[in-house]
Length: 139
Image (cartoon, helix red, strand yellow):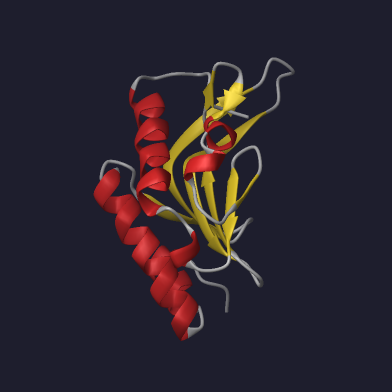
């Protein structure tokens, strides 16, 4: 059976990975307590801070400002947001430790590889975008 809640998702992970993902989950909750966690079945991620987006093309949907997922080879932290036309994750790449960074995805093999304080600074920034009602955070 597929998990339906963040707690069930965490429980479904192997012990070592579960400990690291839950530690990151707790850091996100401490950094941005207003961003309530929920499980996104379609993508297999725990999302924080749901929002509704609508593009100029008319495409619309629901997403989260922050996401967390355990993949086979790495842990993924998704941080939505733009600053000066560049994603905030890409702009902070040099401050995130031993991680691979895409537009909004920060991938790392183990939590010790991630500069946690740098990552939580991004979580704060993304949360503030959502708090401010910004519409310029969807990538």
